Amino acid sequence: MRTWLLPENVEDILPDEARRIELLRRRLLDLFAVHGYELVMPPLIEYVESLLTGTGRDLDLQTFKLVDQLSGRMLGVRADITPQVARIDAHLLNHRGLARLCYAGSVLRARPDGAGATREPLQIGAELYGHAGVESDIEIQRLLMRSLDLAGIASAHLDIGHVAVFRTLMRRGKVPAELEAEMFRAVQAKDVPTLRALSRRVDRRIRDGITLLPELYGGAGVLGVAERGLPPYPELRSALRTLRVLSVRLRDVARIRCFDLAELRGYRYHSGVVFAAYAEGQANALAVGGRYDEVGKAFGRARPATGFSMDLREFAAVSPGGPARSAIRAPYRPRSGALQRRIEVLRGRGEVVVEDLPGHGGARDALGCARRLVLRAGRWVVERLEA
Image (tube, rainbow, N blue to C red):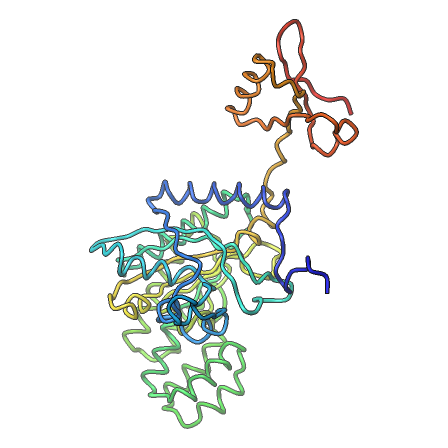
């Protein structure tokens, strides 16, 4: 076995990609900051009990686990930063009012999320705690769309769902947990015949509502169909009102491709609106998010919460980005004070200046420089290199 090989779906990030990713990370964090989102940096590992509290079985299966040599307790390597940020809000910051937090860092997953996906995403996101109204959902989704605009992704659109619809039908119908799990899978697959078979012993209104969910997919008109076809429970009416408000309030910043009431992403984790952002021609979502009020409750402090996250590697891959900055090659003259001062001035302006160390004249092309510093009439000036 070659000792330099990496595990499957784990890769190095080479200079060009790393430059694009890092530039995007800085710009996104600056965007979050001017909207009032403060940066936090949770640890890479935590005790499993803390790391997985309130997150459900899906994240548990994605988490690498190891034994702490100091305490003998089980540790987990984070597979998602969002629960850690919820813990910070609940137990360390302890704000009574709103808290706006953001983060950026690596996560590690036991299995890739899809074919060809990395097991070490570079996750970045923003979370808003302490507000239960639709206004905070709007703020978070607006911030997401501004993030897409900043990255130059002009053709992005949103898909929006609401997990409370399915959850309410299950609770009102007193559906046992095992049957609920089967119905959940059938709804996700939009498998109406299976749903009919599974719900044959459930109350008729609940059965009709469950079998209608896979058809509730499309533009804002779908919400009217849902209002007429779903049982008139207050929880359902409230969920549909929230979606209607979003359809109106996001018009100026987002193209909502569809409302999908069978979309149950993060069902055991989210509690309300869920959404995903896509770019034209891309099968995988660029960003996902939603409301997850119950995670704070699991940490012992009930706090409404909503937010989104994305993988910087996938995000940078579809972003047009910008051309690499043209570097300047400087001759190696350590005793020339004038040259060194000129180099420092250029670097202070953000220019990339690479000193041409002796003995490597035949490999200058590898420096990636399109310009050079030359002495003209007693002054060091920048000139473009001849092709």
